[in-house]
Image 1 (cartoon, rainbow, N blue to C red):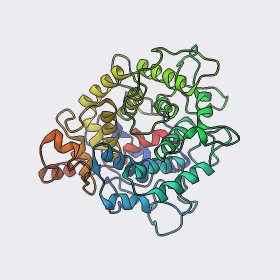
Image 2: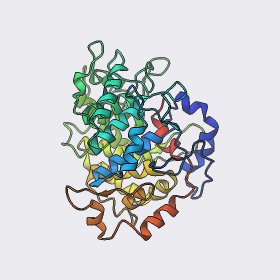
Image 3: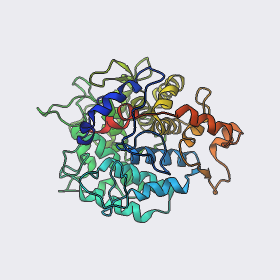
Image 4: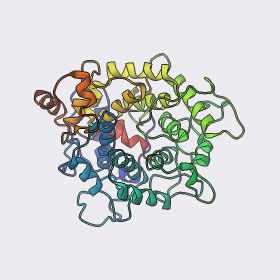
Length: 407
């Protein structure tokens, strides 16, 4: 997956470089000292400066797909990160202070928080304010950039589409200069007769050329389908291969992108990393995203094949990377109907829940999915083992997951 660092990430290039080995096969990378203390209620032990809101949002969303009621402290931490204008930044070390330019509001953190808070319920005011802010920073092409005013990109536009859908807002009705996000996404879709045909680019390069990007493609499938992170399996696509159209509909954009991903996974069942300066290696995070995208597009066979590969190989990556990685794998399991309580002999659910305040069983069902799968308590020794496994996690996930979505 190509890395698109934001201005904030570039400013911390030294920290990111130090974290790069955590994405490789090294089972025991050294964890750099956090630049910010991890506050109570936040999941994970790694530095939250660049992904605090993102990893918390994915965690809460993953817990809800499993039938858990997230802990009040975890939800309160997320709502406490919201700025007065409704937006969210990547992380606010001092939420009592007003938001300023030192911690810039961004569309990705805001949209992820909307999806999480909408899923937890009871936060309509916070969700409404965040959606209003997202609408206010929409670009004239109908899309969104990572930061307000920046050029639109596939990933940011898609995560905002997921937020709008989660809030009960029809993305097609959110328009700027007469254009909606469904008008923006086809502009980044590569024609079928070009190299990488069917894929989506992150955004045009300096010369206006579109380059296939697997990360943007996975995000773009969900965006074009009007779905969020917690997508479920959809109907089979209208065609298996890329189908040319002069003015493709959003459904055709999604189907063409799904065909590209299915081919990109190939016989191996996984994607490869193309991080600048890093050796070629499996890309666990983007493979998990591709599973969700393929399932949402109704391509269950390649989605399940990729999930099976993750089940055999992604456990050590999740341990190194922390809560967002566990959440990605749980959302992948949710998309293909697999049981994350038995992930190649490991429970993704217990491992994730051990990284922060314990969620409770959903009162609507009286039990959690994890209890059904394992027949064992979620407390006691398993929590202790889970905490031990993730002790010392640094910020490797910034490269293997969240940072890949930044320009």
